[in-house]
Length: 339
Image (cartoon, rainbow, N blue to C red; front, side, top):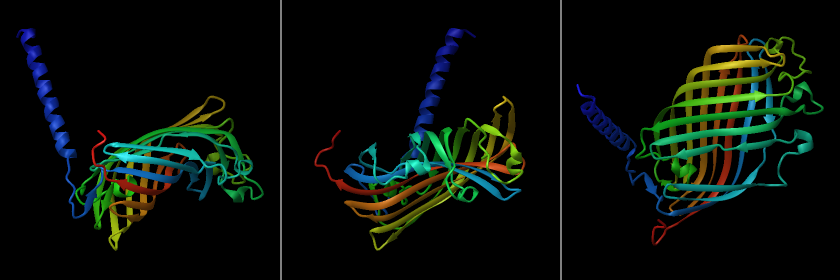
């Protein structure tokens, strides 16, 4: 067969296949809200002020000894403002100088947190990109007189979680988290998806505290760096309870199961790997407050916990992150579209 004849046919086939896949994806994501349940305000300008606190944490858990070591960064409270219009949403926050933890007591933490949560009508997309440097040991019983500070410890992480909402016509995440919709009646939905997460924690010395008086914890492994890469599938349920038309409580929980590869690194150059271990994650979303056609006042919370089986027998590491926010918003009906 002449190659000059095959190439145009192949290009035509690929073009038709791509167009067909695009149409199927469009039909999959296309939705029309049930107006009896959801009032759409994406064409309005939603303006908000908010207070928030982003955070992360790292735990080592030894199930044999029923013991754990908890590390926390000293994160800040922020005040900001933002808006939503159509598909655009922007928030700008500033650190509040007078209501944060004492740096002398908890140490200083430098961080860059690009955590973002995108709520479409049929999809929820969570993105995590973080760097935190400066932790303290949160187990006060190990050293009740003072907190052990670890300014040398830092983490980097990158994660993506995508979930599909089945009952998008009657249930709205956007009402609680973006404030550009108004959930008028109670409704819920099953959600399914998949997630990827990679994180690293490193210090200048062993991550297990030197003054930890628990012999055999994590097999006394003196690793100064640990990292994990995981992939998992998730399933869950979300529900919004509407009380007396304007007050609401939104809650969702998803559980994930998958596999991970975890590595422990030592100062002398040795490594210990767990080629394939079980990965168990969960994501909690909670929101409550007042919502109407024009105003929103409420609190909303997202927390992700990743639990990675480690190279140490019957021990695992937990890496978690999240965001707590309080918002006051007003929607402005526009006489003419902005664009």
